[in-house]
Length: 347
Image (cartoon, rainbow, N blue to C red; front, side, top):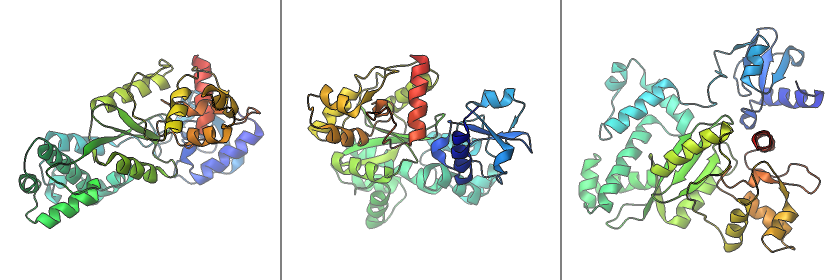
């Protein structure tokens, strides 16, 4: 169980539906005998009718049953069966132009599909399917096909319409010599959904999707790499997905996924040094500065630590204040504390 202070904190998180607390606690509702995740949309009980558990198993052992609205036994934000089915359908036939009758054939309404994709990916299903077609078109251009052939293959008769759609989805207009392509995929984790972005050689970004300023991070990455970003699977995204599963199960301490650092020389030095901080231990910001040979650069090291775009894999969560307090973590301090305790319990 938790202290009175923690109970107050968790009750406020429950009221706010705060996604930063996903996986940190589960709330048992005494009046209904169910337990929920922090972001459950059900009507909130009075604080005296709540008790809190660190794991879903603890809640089950206390006699609570899982909520049918927030599904606490699944990953937070996990794709619905419908979303998974449609993603598989797009992969099986990326060139398909979906119409309302296609959705009716699956027994669903197009508005339901639109809403679920918007919630999961921040775009409608039509935009997702179009982006996938655009990704294939870009691949054809890179392999030597002309822009006009790619334009026709994706269903655009107007050159300006094709270029406008391409730019809106991918961030840059098509040409006969397009830049690099980055592949993006949403990943599930016990602490909430994450987004991974990689090229054909390295992982470029791994962040919790509710991190403040994530859109700006992705935009900076796209501009600095002079690339386009498309929803797509890739070998290093598959690799990091498996490594995250092992990490959260307590079976992985060090990632072997190759990483791409986008930053200044000083920032890169900080990020590489972070990877030498042992699993299950912590260091202070001043210790981090000394580790890179810059004893007077504590604040700069702290800023570089906060600019890390590879959550968990580059363990910025292992850096704490001089007094042992938790400070500054893009994914939220509750996640930072969870990650530190998780590693210490499996070290």
